Image 1 (cartoon, helix red, strand yellow):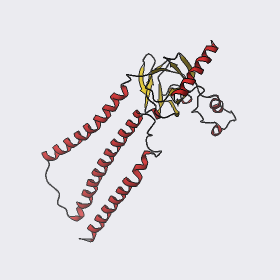
Image 2 (cartoon, helix red, strand yellow):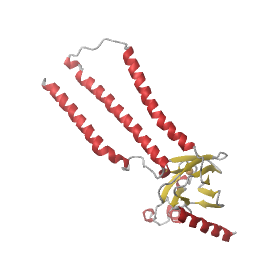
Image 3 (cartoon, rainbow, N blue to C red):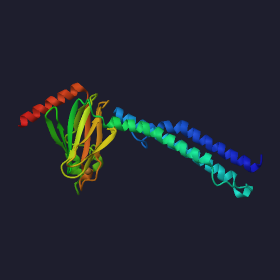
Length: 276
Ligand SMILES: [Cu+2]
């Protein structure tokens, strides 16, 4: 083998080794890494995460394949090696191959994507319903089965700290701009339907851990649903530019086990009864 060829082969082997090491060592970490999409706390969000990873890997493999063929051809068939160029201008076989393979890949990706989408839209069998209304610059939550309703605004500490010359240090405020005065409290392990609308302009209700966001549009009622698997506090924000205080209408969802949720409901009912 010529010295030059040995160098090319050595480079190719090195590239293959780097790619394999990356696939084995780094790629699995991407799932829990901050650069990747989060897995969330619902079956829906886990499905979306899996789908995202499958499509990402399909794209990565295609990318590696295409660039490998391209660079190999460029290096091995370059002019200085006196390579004789091919003269053909049409190949039916090649046309068929590069049409059929992408079609199969696209169909293969469309099937799980459509299944996830259909599942996302199916709010049948919901055990409770919460109506969410967005307005400048707050969220209103109405528990339609419980007769509980309240307005959720940016928490007073964040609100005070964000004012010009407040003298407060935002870094010292707990969850600055991500806390609210009245969080949305939900039970875990229950299918919950949301009816999402708005009173003035378009907003968007988005809590990444649930795996979706829905526009809140005046005059329309959008539907969504969730079934939270893990108790915890999940934060989100309005995701549609809705005016000067768009950045100051966060969302906080607190998911509680059923018995703690029931206690919360009776407390709310007692509080609202007392307020009347
Ligand atoms: Cu907004």
